[in-house]
Length: 330
Length: 265
Image (cartoon, rainbow over all chains, first blue to last red; front, side, top):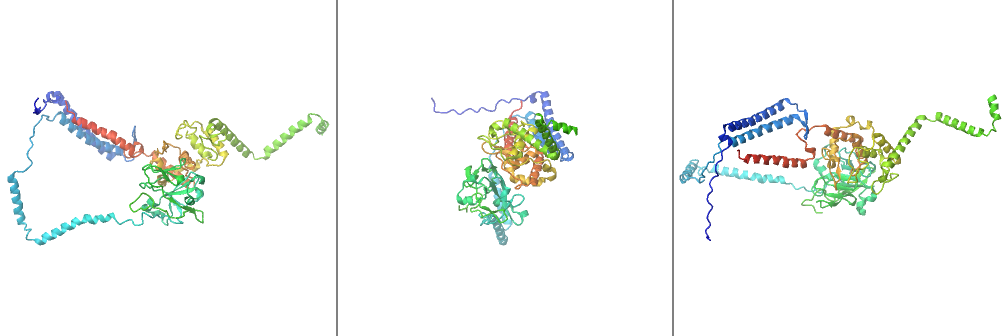
């Protein structure tokens, strides 16, 4: 047995097999026809695109099985342009595959490095030209250019300012405060306890002076829900019980996981679900998390009624609403 | 005068007392039928007949689960105080009687006809007051609804369960919020005021009747509007879109790649 391993012999290129179109003139004609048909299909696509854009009314709908009622104008534009581009490509590919020369060609690779003479002459040119612009003598230009380039480099750092300012108290506080009336969202109507049947849910916001111009950034924190159950069904501590009113319990609608609106309420199971990550909160036990990634119960809002019998917040939220953030302490 | 004398002569006849009784009864009945307001009497008679008919249907079709007096049982809730609207919703959409005791009652072909449903509703409404079936006049959403307001209300109150395009969506443990496409306006209204199954109640004071009509008008506008941007893929968002992109889109790309790499013969 020899220790010498014989290198595999170079197998060379496989024997070239000619295509039908290379040998049979009939097949060649057929391939030519096929390529032209593909290109003509592309032309038809473009014509469909132009026709749809100009003549099909924008409010015309056609029924297609599987697709339903589709806007004919958009369908014509999209399908036309799609066909136009696709069939140009298909025609080109078919042309290349059937008719263009397919003989194997060997192309030698060359060294990437430039020749020594080229490199030497490049260096000489640069040096000569640099001397001609007299950069060494015009120091004022040199310095001002240096300053300009340096300052340009500073601008991305200035942009970092947009990462701030720090949110201060804005993540910790909402519009809810003692005595703020609870109003419907949308509608901004104050709510009385008798407006909610057992099994009802209401999506609410705090009453403000100018509800037409409520800030989205405020809604994102203030959104809350009222749910009415039978008072006996609530399993809360005495303190939390005093935050409810005749079986009406209020929670922040902002999920304590990622801040989605938690508003899928199953009346029979009394579960609140978050649509984003399926966190499930149990209403009777104070929105305790019973499933999903949320780490904390939904903050409960203490509610009561005011002198005119409308539901109001008895106190602000006792903890920040919504997801965790760096400065959140509790 | 001779008739009176003849009657006086026969006053001790043994047939006289029964005859007088019969005459007296007819007299009282006749006077009553003239004196009493006849319309009321027939209406309430028709009503009690309807309730009676409803009770009969209930005893045959519903009482095995809901109890002989609709008091509910271990497998079905009490129907006392659920109102006519609840009965109309559950029975006219075919949800009740339940075909199988799976996670939730499904919409199917109704078992009872309109007359029988009206009778059942009248019977259940007679047990205790509850939400009534809204009338045609109350349901004129084309006149009283505002489609933009309806969309806003829908997105806040309904979209999280029923999907932003009212196509329905999943809840927990196999339950689901059904699609609202093809649902009668009266049933949408009744579902809001009664809160069937997992759905909460949206009473007329929390969402006013006009707002309810706006919601219905919006749902109907979604139902009738075509797709502006090609196939809707069920309007359920990224799930079907992703499925189509991966299966149809990438499948087509693979097919094209295979074709590109195949040598022509």
